[in-house]
Image (cartoon, rainbow, N blue to C red; front, side, top):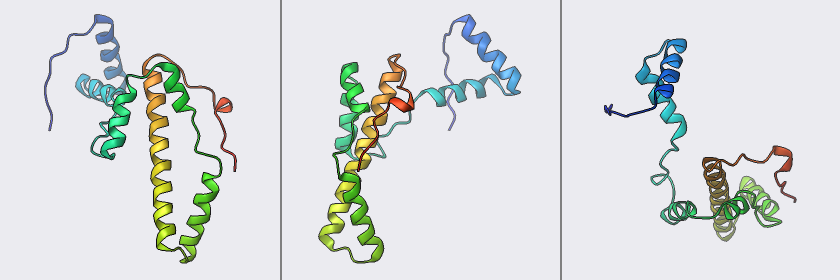
Length: 142
C-alpha cells in the first residue's frame, strides 16, 4: 500500500534528491522512498520476544558509554565451546531432552546478545559515533 505525504525540506536537500533521481533514472518519489528505507530501521517488535523488545526500547535512554559497553560486550568465556559440544551431540542424534533445552536456552541468549550489541551500535551511530575499526573489536576466546 502506498501513501502520499507532504514534507517540507531544505532546498539543498531537494536539489540533492532531484540530482540523485536524474542520475539513477528514477522518479523523485522512488529516490526519497529508497533513502527513507535505508535510514529508518525496521520495526522489530513483531520479530522479537516482548521482553527483548522492551529492553531495546529502553536502551534509547542509556548514556553513550553504557551503549558502548553493551556494543563491545562478549558472551561468558566457554559459552561457545558449550554450544559447540551440545550442537555436536544434536548432530550425532545423542542429545538428551535436558541437553536440548540447555542448547535452546544458550542459543536464545546468544541471539539476544547479538541483537543487543547491534542495536547499541545503531544507537551510537545515530548519535554521531563511528564504530571502532574491526581490529579494535574484542575477539572471543575459547
